[in-house]
Structure formats: C-alpha cells, structure tokens
Amino acid sequence: MRHLIAALFVLAVGVTGCSHASAPAPAPPPPAAPTQSVLPFTGLNGPYDVAVDTTGNVFVSDIPSGRNGSNRVIELPAGSNTQRLLPFTRARVMTDPSGRVWVINGGHEPSQLVKLAHDGEQQAVLPVPELGRDYRGVIQAIDDAGGLYGMIGGGEDSGRGCCLPVQVAKQAVGSNTPEPLPFQHMSVAAGMTVDAAGNLYVGDASGRRVLKLAPGASRPAELAFHALRSVIDIAVDAKGAVYVVDGQRNQILKLNPGSNTPTVLPFTGLNGPVSVAIGAKGEVYVVDDGNRRIVKLEGV
Image (cartoon, rainbow, N blue to C red; front, side):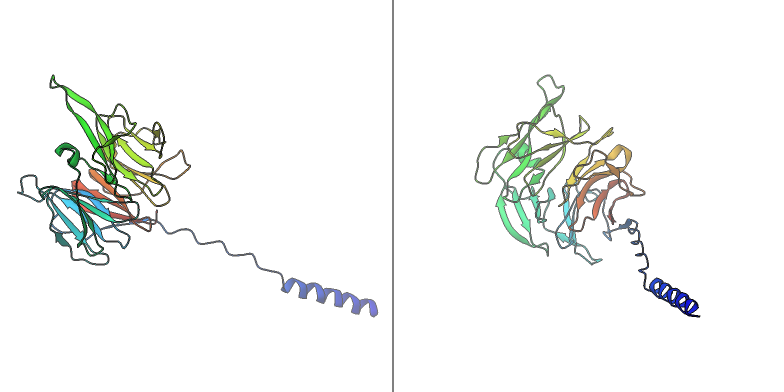
C-alpha cells in the first residue's frame, strides 16, 4: 500500500512540475511588406527634383506647360492634400544632412541660396558665390556648414566635340575660390549628396558608377553597385545607406552600409525616374517623370 501511495505521489509531483514548464516564446511577426503610394500633387508637367524635410514636408521642382523652360517649386505639407506654390523660378531643391531643405533660386538676380522653414517660408537667404553662371547652375549638394558642391568646366571642346571632363568642386563658406576635389575622368556628374560625417557621394553618369570621397581622402572609392545601366540621381540616408536611380531599368537600388550587394526596391510602375530623396523614417520618394507623379515607398 505504501508503495502505491509513493508511486502516486511521484506521479503527482511529475504532473505538477510539467504544468509549470515555460511555453516556447512566440515567433516575432514578419515585417510588414513595403507599401507604395502616390503623393497628391496635382498638375505636374515636368517634375525633376524632390526634397523632403525632417517633418515630412515634400518639395518638388516642376517645369509647367508653356513656360519656356522656366520652373516652379511646389510644397506638399506633411499630412495635407493641398499643395502650395512657392515664389521661386529656375530653381533646384536639395536637402542637407540635417534634413533642412534649400533652394537655389536662379530666377532672382543675383541668384540666391534659400533655406526653408518647415512651412515653406524663407528662413535664411544667402548669396550664391559669384563663380560664374555655369557653376551656379550646377550646384547639386550642400553640407551642414553651408558648403556647396557642384561642377566646374565640362562642355564641348574647341573642335566642337564632346565632351570635356567636369571637375567636382567644393565652395566653402566664406571662400571666394572653389576647391577642386579629386574626382577624375567624369563628363557628367549625375547627382551629389553629403552625409552627416562629411562624406561626399557623386554619381558618375558616363562611368555608370557611384563614388564616395571621405573627408581628407586623396581619391574616391567606388561603391559596390554592379552592372548599372545608367546613373540619374543618388541619395544617402541617416544610416549611411546609398540609393541610386537607374533610369534605363526604371529601378531604385539601395546599398546598405558594409554590404557589397545592392537590393532593388520594390517600386512598381515607374516610367523614367529622375530623382530620389529619403525621409527621416527611411521613406523613399521618387520623381516618376514619365508618369508625372511623386511616388513614396515606406517600410524598406
């Protein structure tokens, strides 16, 4: 009898112990699939530049119909369906590493460099350095200190052939002379951008490659974008990932820091993308010129 009671006691303890065993932790849910949307800009005719500030306001340069090559800047405030026309012509829009939006206002004489507040109003107006019209027309990037990056030279040679190489240059604040940077054998610079660490990224359209120049480096390094058919524009996000518009393939590619394998972002229906910008949360904005729209991809 005692043996039976002991056996029942052991069995009860075993069952009780099993009842307190930890259940396996549930697997984390898979990440949400990226979502694509079209921003509610209206009446776009020839969009070609896009910039977004830290609060999600989006700015687009657009060539309207019948304006003989002039252009306009349109803002779509974050969370709004109503766009605003800003008072600039012959303008480019760009973002500095801190997410502030700047406008090169070529329609003003002399040209102006305008920093915008989040509501699109002019927060600061600076003169563009008097380096000649060609230089002012091809400023493509600005750093947090207000240094400008662009191209000098280029164009046709004396025999009317094409093309003389361009020189990438930096115009530091307070300087009257552009500083040539060590990029060589480039006939067209297809986009420039600067990150918070001061690295300069340049798209080489003729070489179909993307170059990165670290501060103080004697030469740029080529990033691991393989077999690009074209380089139209580039961007960099706050984590150091680099984005490239391959216009011939209608693709946007992303290269994460430390990776040698770029990924094609899952945009659909692109037709002639010409510009890319990155939001504070990693959203990717693309000017889809062939469809005259601005497309946003989230969750990448």
